[in-house]
Image (cartoon, rainbow, N blue to C red; front, side):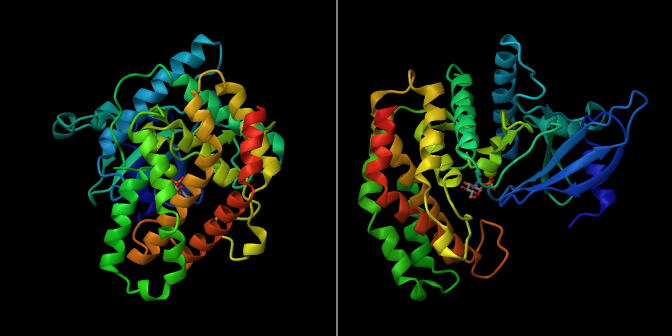
Length: 378
Ligand code: GN1
Ligand code: MG
């Protein structure tokens, strides 16, 4: 826990305009701590706000390299937006750098030290500009919103299609199911929280799908499915919309790195189309809305149809099952590990998430033929 004074001191390490008024928690992130920094109105009346984040260095072992990824990617998109006559301060995140006056000689010698602050407790902080008039959703309430979200992710991928500088891998094997199964075997063996004995059914859900998931991933490994710069965490709450429902920009770029574009599609379907919550205790509420699937796919393909390869199009519908399966595995694995990765609000929170995501996966499996048909239609 940090006091308001400590937070003000941390925020002061960054190059912000104006005097800090308050710093408060924002949003339900599972990994980082996110805060909003408000400033007092200046003489010209402006009072910019900032997003201050404590980056979770247990999850992201190299925060400086991650911040460098984010800086490079956002600069690339900024140039694109500006060239197209858009507003580079609203249509892409703006990384706020360190106030140069606060950088010590020791810090200056470290890589990318202008992009983060490491405090006396050993925690890492980074800042970006808050975009005024932006809204986020935890759940898509209309097909129109799904369509826009699909367009937004499609556009984001398109803006980065010609980005060729290698990006650091911020989390090893993030959406690599072969690696996840290695971690899984390790978790089962360790049984750190003594929970494995009660999880025979859930473990069966994972093991029974292992072969089909690895089969899909081997197509990425052998290059049949290409690798591109992707976001890797495209849940609906990671998009900022304006008040008219238009996409402003994609946020939470911590996992932006090289992977298959299919993961972005699959993860979006996992979150946009869920008729319930990701951690719904009432499983009767959870299912995949085919209407929302159709709307998202249409929006996404309106931006990407001509640039995706045959193999990407062929596996697009399956990617939703792949990522949802991976999420079931990750929540269950964290439950088995004793809740080390995701923030939880109850002792069984990760198990509740596991069940809810499994219900969603089942719903996708049941509607799979229809999903494939819809993609073909587009
Ligand atoms: C995490 O960072 P956040 O809270 O948007 C997680 C995603 C999961 C998601 C589940 C770095 O997303 O991979 O899909 O929770 N991010 C990381 O809601 O693990
Ligand atoms: Mg994230």
